[in-house]
Length: 357
Image (tube, rainbow, N blue to C red; front, side, top):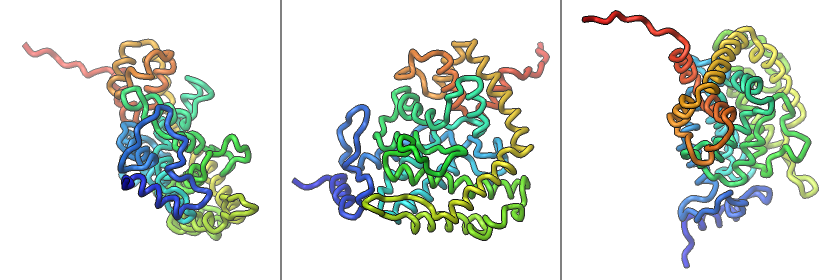
């Protein structure tokens, strides 16, 4: 019997991929078993489900660093996601890893991100739960909220990579094996996310006037490059050339000098951009918006149910969750402009118009 298109593709994967890669045919599967697609591999199918879901489209109107930018040149959460995917795919291809798995994780890694960037995440930690994280919310999106409350039923490897992509102010790759993605493809995405935001956030910070290019530490400029493209190329090439197989184990890691420069650049960005007065002023404004919206929908269940239905998140696995959880899901799913418009409609007075007889 002739092989299907998917089976032929899986055969080709096994013939050229690294022994440390995760071939599509060796996926641990889905929470709910499905008949395999005749054309697409499991990871290709996951990628397509992510790209076509509502949460992915909303990323175009969610903050990366600068709140609700009116100038189109600034990054949004969607363009950040695309840059992560591009970097991750380039690394995976060079290391003979599974490019489709890598791309699926990269495209899905921020699906649960809040409006107003990490400011929104901080607010939900304060008003909902200190355990709230955008990475766990991304898992909730793909497992529960999408597809009318039934989730996307993604493979184990993609969900694992999404969950373990975030590092905050921690190490590029954690030492605790429990915090590492189960695949090297997932670990590549974690590093690519770091590379992407360091470079494009610096680019946007210079464009906005928050910092000047010459303020960037000289050691970073010397080791990584003086432009966005130079820095990105240096980081990508260094990771590829520095990752080695030793004693039968594959070690995915940047070189010591480049890693040190990347961490120094991150520290510079936190001190001069993410914690800058301009960004913090916007944080206070967004905190007021989200805090008051949270309280309003916690007290108005009918409006909450309608809001969830408007975002196509009602029913399914979502039904029966505590109201606080539902409000958190609703808030986290909003875009910047949706949250601002909703706030204005609920709390701003409407202009009085005289009735004409």
